[in-house]
Image 1 (tube, rainbow, N blue to C red):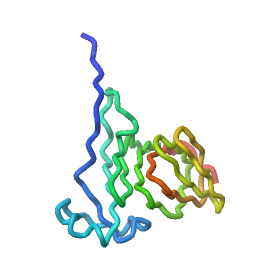
Image 2 (image 1 turned 120 degrees about the vertical axis):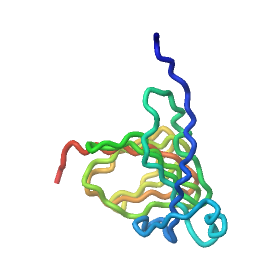
Image 3 (image 1 turned 90 degrees about the vertical axis):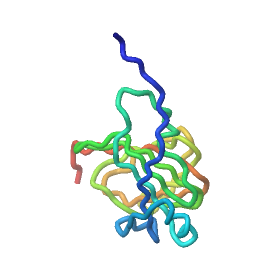
Image 4 (image 1 turned 30 degrees about the vertical axis):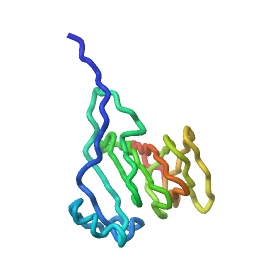
Length: 160
């Protein structure tokens, strides 16, 4: 009997992380969604779901990560020791500030447009655009308007 693929719309995780500054997500504490409503004017929200999406199902790629007002939402597509694919949704005005990683990172804009700064040079990417952020490059993402992207990191080699 042949397996039937079904289209699955992934619901955002109920695990909401709340940070006073999304730029520093290492200092994040978990609160309930009910508590989040009380604090929404004082904080920024970064919602993450590190569980992989269902395998052998068709997904609507721009619906994997949902927009959340005043937040950056992250949804793991695939996570392995050799690399990962992550879908991110940025609401207008949000950013992930300067960081570096020891691997190349291929990003693709799947909705909206984004400003990506790599080593102090800013690029404007629109839906359908992609680029490689080199390993060890200082980079940041900024949403003049809301946007969604896929980030693909392959950890198979280390280039110094």
